[in-house]
Image (cartoon, rainbow, N blue to C red; front, top):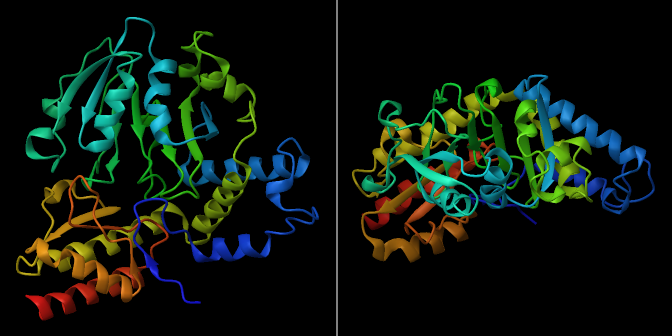
Length: 361
C-alpha cells in the first residue's frame, strides 16, 4: 500500500513516524499489556504520558509558568461559545476581529453569552486581507479581543501578533499553532482544535493565563468551567485518551525536527514554493489573497476556467494528490500544507499543476 500526499484542511495529514509508532504500540503500549485506549486515564502510566506531553508542549512553545495548559474534549467551535462564558462577566462586551468564515462563526456563537463588538472586518473585500491594526476600533472595557490567527477557508493569516494593550488577546490557533515560534505572553488565551497540526480530531489544546481562570467565579456549570478543568489537570471528565497520546507523539516528533524554528523554515519554504508556482502560471491559477496576508498553512486557488475543476481533481487524485477540492464557500482548489506535509508533497503538487496547465492552457 502506498500513501498519497494528503492536502486535507482537517482532519489533516499526520507525520508518518508518528503513525508508525502508534501502529507498533496499538495492541500493547509501554509494557502495559494493553492499548493506551484501554487504560484508565487515572492510572499512573497514562498520567505520566499526559504529564510528559504537557512538558514537551511547554518546551516547544516556551509557555510561561503563569499559564495553564489544558487538554480538552471537543473542537474549537465549542469554544466559540465557551470562551465568552469563561472570560466575560454579565453585561460585558468583547471585541472581535473578523477575517474569514471561522472568526465570523466565533461571533455568531459568542453573541449568546456576551455583547459582541466587531472591532474590524475584512468582509468588504471578500476576506482577502487582514484589517490594519491602526483601523481597529477597540474598547478599553472589553473583556477580551478575539482573532482567528489563520483562516483555513479564506487562506489569510496574521503574521504579527496584534497589540491589544491591557485587554487580553484571545486567539483561535487551530490551523497554525506549532507552525512557528510564538510569544505566548502576548496572549491571554490560545485554543486550538487538534486536527490540523497537533493530532486527531476530538482534542482541543488550550493555553490560558492563570489570572483569567478566576473570572468565572462559579457562574457556569463545572463541565464548561476552564478553572475546574485546570484544577483537575484536564481530567474533570474522561479525556480523549488516544488523541492525547498521539498529540504527545507529535510533540516529540516536532522536537526531533529541531523545534519550531526549524519547522517554521520548512513551512516558509513550502508556502513559497506553492505561491511562486501559482503566481508564475500566467493567470492559469490565481490566489486572490493580499500577498501580505497569505496563509502558510492553507492555500486556496482557482483555475482560470472553472470548467476544468472536475478534471483537475480527477487527475490530481489519480496522481496521489488528495483532498484538493476547495471549500464550498469559495469553490476552486485548496492545498493545506501543515507541519506534517513534506516538501516532497508540495513539489509533487507543483509539478502536477505545471503539467496540467501545459496540457489545458
